[in-house]
Length: 157
Image 1 (cartoon, rainbow, N blue to C red):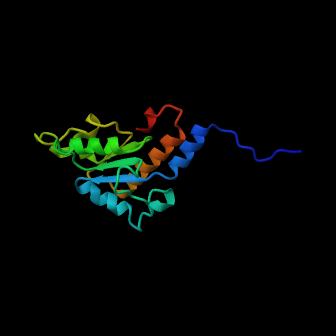
Image 2 (image 1 turned 30 degrees about the vertical axis):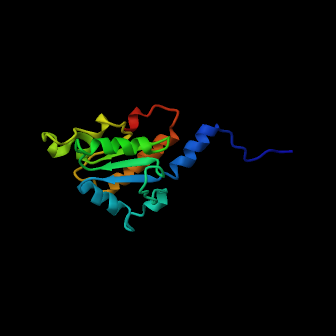
Image 3 (image 1 turned 60 degrees about the vertical axis):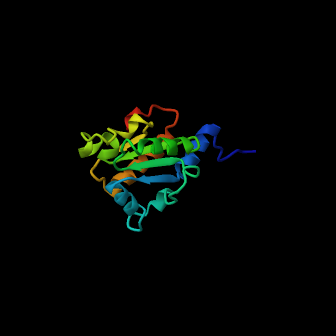
């Protein structure tokens, strides 16, 4: 008896592979970056080919939080609450200069200088606002990060 087509892996690696093709983003659009995020979900960019077309309105149904835009000190507790309500494993994308560092409003008394001050961020997407192609690249970075779950992830940020 000859054995063909045998695949040997761990359960964790198999689950990470399946998760990488079925991420459900929780959208949290705060400013102009949200318009580019909505454009990414449109027909022109067709993110359904990557498995990201199901944008979830509830944090309990999603596993990828996209923070798109300026986070103020007043919104920071809400962002943190959304993150805490998401089931594990969960991933975060900071989209745009404002989400990453406060952008041009960083000197304002009301703007948080980076969402990574309150929640951990996995992928940063620079730009003001970043184009839909940049968001697609960030989504693919999350997918690559899941494929390399057991390896060092510092080179992906």
